[in-house]
Image 1 (cartoon, rainbow, N blue to C red):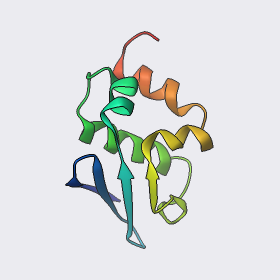
Image 2: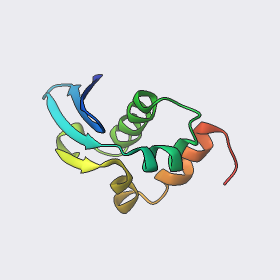
Image 3: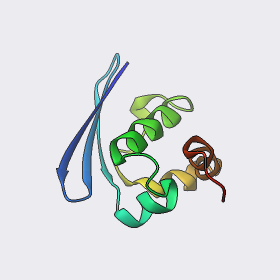
Length: 92
């Protein structure tokens, strides 16, 4: 499985997942959400890549929303926030 990240404009990214079925996902990642999640310890692309791997560990790419704001992941997976913070290795 391959994850490709392309920046469309400002804070909008197109994520393409190549698996048995290719899917495309439009993701909004604002600076506010980015800083809240990573405190600048990772790049936006690293955060998106990690986030999609997180999602793919829990569901197939065909079930991931086609358009969403990155922080919406916590609505479906409450452990996302703490997982990201641990990955970034900084205290809450």
